[in-house]
Image (cartoon, rainbow, N blue to C red; front, side, top):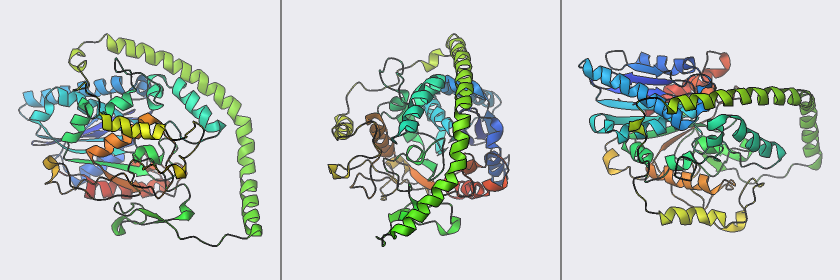
Length: 456
């Protein structure tokens, strides 16, 4: 089906199949998905596939939260499906593609569609996210700048900010919406599991909007120091797409550099950063004031839009039970509790190596497992990983984030790791959000998705 994100959604449909894709980041624009849609159209002409770009969450409407955005997109999708049925061209298959926050809105929307019975009439085929913060954007790093980001970001982006920083309480669940989205007993996970193929694309470095750990759904980050690891790529897509079966391994111990070499390197790095630090000292006060004022204005407008949305018609069908069981999953509680018992403080980067705890799986230690029975015939074999002793330190995530990792990995994902190096901020490059020389590497990502990650 379709899904939306902060800026727009792309939906594809044909005489016998429909593909819905889309998604954007905060402050998104439908044009950001132009290259993705154009590339899909080149491979699949109109008589095979039709593409819809949902526009209900464009611009600052992405401040309004995942629930509101998901309901808007669901309304947009249902309207289209009903029109096609009336025209005698009902949809038989559907796929969803989400970019950035759009991936979260998409996960909410498919839950509503599933609960209303659409997946009994339409076969869900592909669900794909690009640079989507599945675990939110709360940074696990220590330092005043990280603490400031966690504090300010969660309180200056209206509903979406509270949800992305996992400080919200969703309806009567008394839990953050991201936790509910990942609950095995929720309509959202039930819907996600119906898709024949589930995949994600995650930048391994320089994604300042949605870091690697959250887009790859993992508790470790082996790419903090690229000089310390060996990266393996898929030959056909080298050096952009990593080999999912064996993406990275620590390098063998090397001789320690001499004191002079280390001092020289450190001094050069410091001198290089002096102009940047000087500029930041001058700009931060101005930027902070502008950001705070604008955020206050946008949050006020967002709250007004949410109130209007809540008073609208047609929402009754979306206000349904979100959790299909009242039972407690003791295994999940025990898993998350194990990490809570570790001596982890809010300021540390990683959990202690001596804890002896196993980490939720990540892309660094993948193993192949059988896909769920209903997906066993898929040519895009889903891969899952199992908890094991980590080769890399475990990030000091929250209990809720550890539980999300466990639950989402249980569903099964094909995780595609992306190494873009031509730009300093890779979030836009991964989908070629605009035509510019530095985004050429993103075209390899889109080509891989079309060749390997999109089944008709």
